[in-house]
Image 1 (spheres, rainbow, N blue to C red):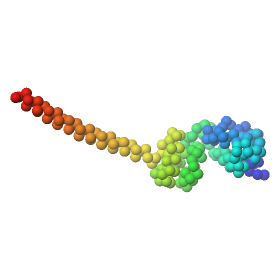
Image 2 (image 1 turned 30 degrees about the vertical axis):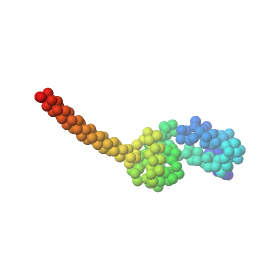
Image 3 (image 1 turned 90 degrees about the horizontal axis):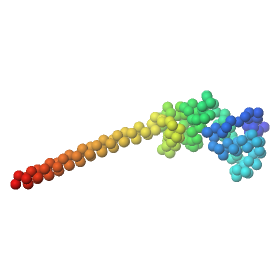
Image 4 (image 1 turned 180 degrees about the horizontal axis):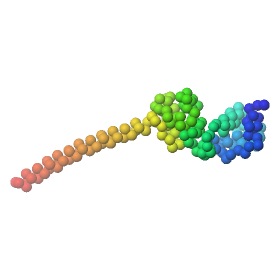
Amino acid sequence: MGQVERIRTHYQGRELPERPFFIPAEKWLLFTAIVTVRHPLAVVAGRWGITVHRARQVLQAVHAQLSLPRPSEREWKEITPHSPIDDLNLSVRTSHKVRERGCTTVEDVLRLDLSRIGGRASRAELIGALRRCGFQAAGDGSDCDLEKVRSELHDIGQRMENDLRGWRQRLLWIESKLNKLSAE
C-alpha cells in the first residue's frame, strides 16, 4: 500500500473538520480532493498545474500537520503556547534552527533567547511570526528598541533644556538693552 492509500485509509470513515486555520486553503482543497473525494493523485495534480510529486508532498504535509498533538480544541482554532511550531508557518531554514534548539511547541520558542537563533533573516522571520500570533519572546529586540527610544527621548530633553537656556539668555540680553534704552 502506498503513502496516498495509507493516508486515505487513515481518514476513511472519519469526518474531516472544517479547514484548520494553520492549513492554507489551497492545500486543504487539494488534501480533501485526494482524501475525501478520492480523486487520483495525477488528476488532482493536473488540475492544480503541479507535479504529482508536489501534490504528494502537499498531501503528506497536511496529514503531518493534522497528526500533530494538540492538547485541547483551542489549538485547532488559534495558535496558543501549546501549539506545534509548525503552526507558525516558518521557512524550512528557520524551522530547522528552532528544532535544533529542542523546540516543538510555541511555548518552547518563547522560552528561548531569540538573539541567539540563526542569522538576522531567520530571527526576523521568527519574531514576525510570533508577533503576528500575539506573542513576544525574550531577545526579540523589543527591549533594545525601548532602550533606544528612552535614550532618544533623553537626548531630545537635553537639547530642549539647552535651547531653553539659550532663549533665556537672549531674553535677558533684550531686557537689559530695553532697560538701558528706557534709562536714557
